[in-house]
Image (cartoon, rainbow, N blue to C red):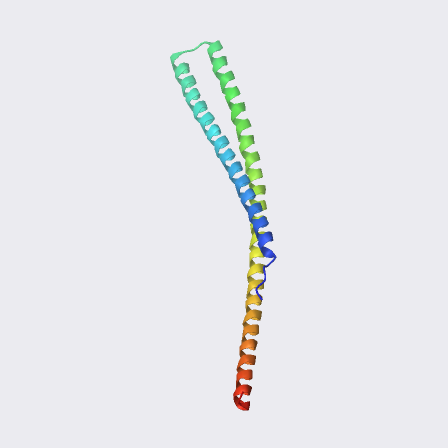
Length: 149
């Protein structure tokens, strides 16, 4: 009386979707970490260069040198801003990917719950069937014993 449940295929497909969504989320998080690290490196480089500018200003510098420092710091600031835009864009993508992963995980959990319930119903039916067969066998044996067969 045991039957294969149709949920196995659905669960396998849903698990594949969850795995793919988790992998995509992980990739985005790694990219974000990398971009954030680059931004921090640029921040450190800017701080270092600003210290060099302050040191050079204390020691005396020409207007040309000062313009060069400031132009480079401006370029560095633009690079930092662009890197920050990339980090923020990845943050938004991560939020969407996390939501998609959660939805796919919820779908998988639903299929697993349905499978569990169906299995319980199937087990109850099997138990009732076996009890009925046992009762019929016992009743038949009792009739046979009564009639002397």
